[in-house]
Amino acid sequence: MIQRFEVPGKLPSLNEYTRRCRTNPYAGASAKKEAQARVLMAINAARLVPMKPPVLVSFEWVEPDMRRDKDNISSAKKYILDALVVSGVIENDNWRWIAGNLPDLYRVNKADPRVIVTLEGEPR
Image (cartoon, rainbow, N blue to C red; front, side, top):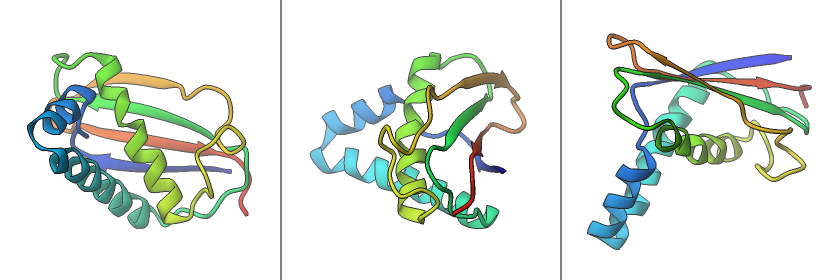
């Protein structure tokens, strides 16, 4: 079974998250909470079905330009995987639940930045 959902816009990069953490100890937690809430809204809108382990998760990062480094962009996987657990789509984001590597594809679309997440596995 293949399931997909899209998170509109850009999620905070590692640099943005680090900057907020250095500003105020609570700002980092707030940044993670805000990003995770955006991902949860996208998951709920997609009406994803709970899945059994292992689940292959892949990411397509659609950026408005090429200003941010790819490693900083993909650090947002943390928000996405944590939101999948909170939503109940997967029970955990540990080695048993997440299959192999987490492949990334990067594209540029100034008019429609977003993150497209694809889940492959068996329904629960």
